[in-house]
Length: 277
DNA sequence: AATTGCGGCAACCGCTCCCAT
DNA sequence: TATGGGAGCGGTTGCCGCAAT
Image (tube, rainbow, N blue to C red; front, side):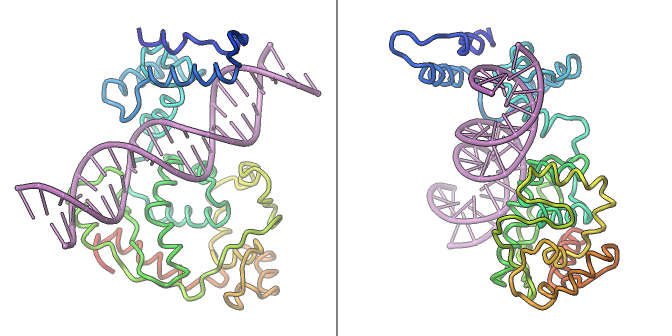
């Protein structure tokens, strides 16, 4: 049956014997389990089984889910499928302007803490955001520094039609430059506005109670200055008085970076018109 | 028409953290 | 207090489809 192989080795209960150490046995067990488990894309039947099982029994123990549901998958795989695809509250459409802005701002602030970013984007998963960043935004920000052509983000979402896909691919190279782009540094310990980069990200993000509070971050370049991670790319980032002003009046619009504003406009035009900017 | 290269997404892997014992 | 298991996270890989050659 499906879960016999999975449950065969209870490694923690085994003692070393025949000269095989526990770690070695662990490894053997893992390999054996892996051989027995299905990998790769999920088919609709598996989705249906998992969905039905979780609907009925919930997700208290992911390792039990595949065994009890009769799926030849690891608990991790089931969890991943549920969390990133099957969950009913998953949003699978376009990334809105607000969502893109939020991702950009939070990434400036938190780095690659996708789960923390995802918390502020209801319906979006960390994996979605990570993929979106890696395939669209990262290139833009890398090229941001070198001022070369970048690829416009795809904003249609994951379930695009072939037509949209073709249109996107035929028109997705735009020229964007960021004349005043800040450069992120690898610094040791930063405490800005209560954010400690050396702490777990959740601890820092916990202080941002709602998306509304993100309005405080509406000045991307200035935020870099607040975080003290800006190299000398212009006075706006190094002016201590300016930084103090931001700290004193966080809700007042300061020094909105023209390069990023332009870039954001490009994104929005691409989304709204589905064509060149 | 066949081949190659590339982009995008889904999924896996390895690691760390948290919590129960 | 130490240990082990489960959960969660970020990085990476593999596959598929499309465009270019």
